[in-house]
Image (cartoon, rainbow, N blue to C red; front, side, top):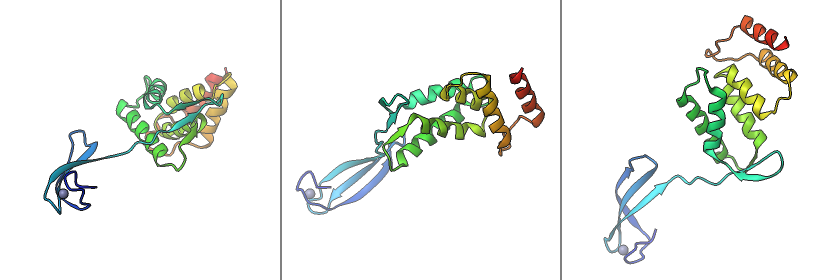
Length: 173
Ligand SMILES: [Zn+2]
């Protein structure tokens, strides 16, 4: 970074500190040539990510839209708002760290399901029903069967086998 005063290339850092929201770091610098003092800021660069929808149209990734979708699926479940926020954070980080700048809505949907899977079966089914556009009971039963064949691994699973069979039974009815 060039000194604003003499254009010299080197400076030393006198002080570094995080800004209040911890979103950036403020550095106080001194030019090694003319001793001029100046301030630089370092912040995380969020690269724009494009979502390709089912009808091939494109839109920018919208964090709040994703959040709303997951909130809706988790309504009246035990999944806390904080957990949902952290799911969205993780998905956003996954998108940011990928080599691609474009993702299909399908990929996003599967990412969400992967996260909801160990959190709540109800939220999982709800989200899957919207995003996979379930047409009828057959789709629910298939998804429930998939869940049954690959049981949840984490201790947050509150549904025992009997509950699952009942849920399945009710849906078949
Ligand atoms: Zn200088």
